[in-house]
Image (cartoon, rainbow, N blue to C red; front, side):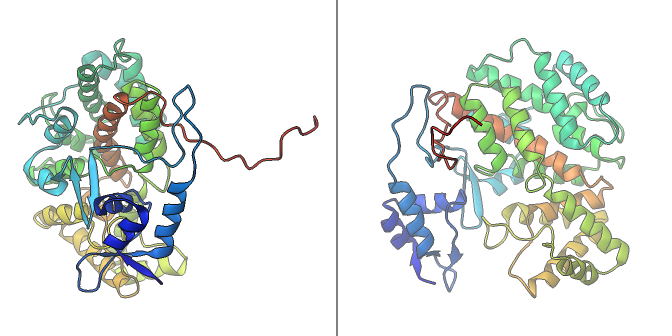
Length: 409
């Protein structure tokens, strides 16, 4: 395979080296570490294909704000590069270690850090959302419940169409709190001034909310706030481009998140770890997955050739929680056995599974954590999109049907 250095790839694409890494973070290019661990190498054919796509002539924008197909989305929220990721230029793992979920979310929205900030649910929104969630059948999934809560909260908010920055931020604070609080209780409730992580803990498990476990959950929420233009985030930007209100933006994201290839991945890892603990053998469980032609859940990430920094941060915290020891050992055994055959490392889904299994949470708990956390990121992207030209997120389709002027059927 013909490979290029970062500088060579940048020259072929006609961009700066920093932009090459931005292409990698958005999944437009793949890379691997250079021998010796310095720099990255790129497949020349992949670089040339991307260069050809960017050189294609595009139709002029339509009057309704149509944007050229394949145009990159401008965003100042998240950068992913070299096995690290950054929120507005600050290392996200370091932020999660220093501040809580609500503090980091509000900082992303406002650019100001408010230590100790708490999000509270407006009573009328919480009443409507709780009633909507309670009306769902028992088999409803976590995203079903969160979506119902968001839709009901929107219907109860007559100011939802106010897209001024301050109004959107106020809506977001209330919506995050409403989503976390409207879910059915599994354990003792906490007051409305408790952190979102503590309120969410009581909805996920009946176990007591000890400080170390809640801190781990809060860190998970913070680490998962955003991850650049994942499928659900791109969907929310399309909705925001049409000036959908924040509740509609969030329900759009929840719709994309509901697919098995996105938000539900941690549930597969949870079930795998539970099976390892029940059978007492990671080797047998890994073998069963491979024999059936399935990927081993919780391992590998296309944006992180090395360690997923989110998993690394969560494993460090889980290592200090005694009741997580068995699940953590099972996860490490799964990773060690799989690494003998494939160069993959634990990702955040496996770390969430360790948390959910050790805390007696249901398999869908990781999906709930993911959705509540990502709500803050979706709002951050909506705020960016509201400041752009409306309806710019409309690519041109390439028609592949029959030629025009076909006879009537």
